[in-house]
Length: 503
Image (cartoon, rainbow, N blue to C red; front, side):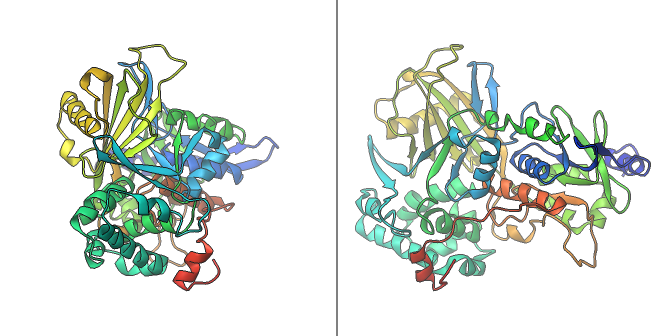
């Protein structure tokens, strides 16, 4: 590596750079933790580190926080749009805890019904029955669904029973295998796979069943639909995502920390044993600890060859693949969708979400309702023009909602995230690194470098919940304090069926 490379320069800088410390409001000295990356993982790490008595310096290249879960001002429409539709579920206890700390839980609208289109305006509803315990809470509405025949419903129920009985311990045996193998073993008909299993797996794991890690998909169905009655409730932000993070700077500033937007990290400073800070485009940020909350390919560029040879967690960063997501915003001149969400089984577009038109913004062409279409694992859409994308999406919308035509469209805005999630491929968990160096690891590692991001070893697929979990775990590893929040406990009947007794 050449001496002009940022990572090489960082090693020479770190040997003479002072170790930074800031005076606290009480006149003492507090330790500084530099967090690289202002996505959900970095936000969670920074806020939790602040609550644990550290001085966090959160470094983010962009002008807004949120990473891949943020919003932007669309200059063409004059509307602030999310880069893609993001939802949380009742089982996502850590992202909800983060939202609670940020004071934005009230900005979520909760829905306990998922709607499934059958074409021609017909649709089924899958609703939580509040009077029934888990895992029976979906049974009444599932029995009434007309999308599936009685034989197909029996096949789905058979697979659910297997998932329910195996629980977390049974999922271990499926690690490294494709979820499609599980569907074949439980004799799922092709039509059931296409119309039931695929819409859920695609939306949760961003890969089709044939290419998805079985343990991840099994976790989604078990903990997201079966184990707890509230687990499957869907929360959607009623405000643009970037507005959920408005208090981050205030929280960090209250403990002497700092939010540094528009600041590009160039390298991690390394003295041969420890990281001593972060080299940025405007100078070095000295720190006693560093949390790298960036994607694996970005982390690889921040680390020198010396660092990567010293810490085995950094050895497989190039092995991660990624999967794209396409979000298409459709501003409609009239209100065309009567439900808050709608799955489109068997279609190219996987989900539709309906949003009210903004009331406080009269810029751009007027519209009555904004739909957001979501296409997961959108490899087949790469290279299409905006006109082609809009035409394809409108075709599926009109299949689900008759009468919708291009004349109803005020404007459209496709947003493609080419590297939206890491690819949840079979065996991916074997290369996901731990947050910190393991105690007693004879091979060593960089003890004060902590890794965060949904791609790390969170036990979850690539979701905002996984990101929040990783940030909380990193902050706890840095300086103690609260760690990862517990998940929802399995219901009593679920535990009885698994033979596990008390939670």
